[in-house]
Length: 375
Image 1 (cartoon, rainbow, N blue to C red):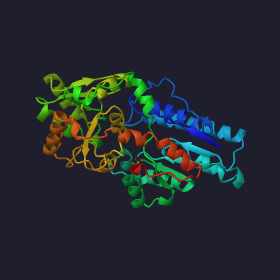
Image 2: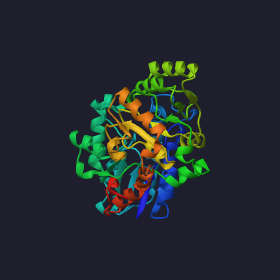
Image 3: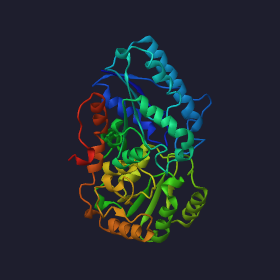
Image 4: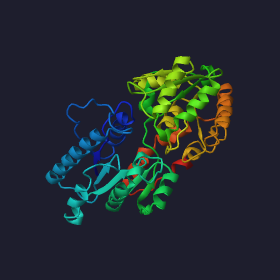
């Protein structure tokens, strides 16, 4: 089986910096893997300048040049129906060229198409929801022309079902991750949690769907009890302007420490010496930050909303009443003071570490377990 892999462009402030490395490392010994990259926009800074999740210009340029490279490859090398095209992101501008070509080839020469849906317009809190008048038909086109679409959590699959996607094509495999790679980037064993300072870390973006004001409400209420740190891979904290201004004030007051321009190694140093990682998001399907925290034995505290109950196994110690500052503060104090109340913090990391194995098994037509039933 040959897999033609179209990775996302790498950004230091996003997980795309590591996603291709994880995927290639896991699959290259198991299939005939061909990596099809795109090109960077000329004179690009390599950072996200336009948009919040991925750079709007950079994403479009990378994807269209990537699809052009794939078209050239398909023209040069014949494929079979046993081969597969795997696309890291459902929104890949230029995608329509792929089914357009394949539908004009003999059936035996058509590789199957798979893509991953990280959120998209079915999620009312995703930035593409506002684009749904044209984005939804695009997403339907991708799903209708694909063999399968991968999502991380059951609630995301439900949102696609409500939006009238062909759910027989939707596969819940978890979020791609490589625990060994993440551990190696720290370079040492994390501190035992009871020996760590009473520190809580915030790792999400400051965009509106991450609900940063709730996090800042927690900081305002508990800065006398807990050390707070915020990490970002960017040179500055970007996002909701009112929240960014409020963060600056809290930083001036000494209520929170902000680490800007963090490398992954620097971020992991902060994460592995924290007792709790706080997530206040309206939108997260499993959450990369929660998986990383789990890898280093750091407890995630999150709202009982969307995928968090599934990802945290309905552990009431780690889930607060959605949007309740009081309950979030009470739960955070309890975890900071006594982190041993949460057992097997590493479970989420272990099961998500096998996501790429489940994804490949699905593309091979093999059965795979539901990730929340593992271990």
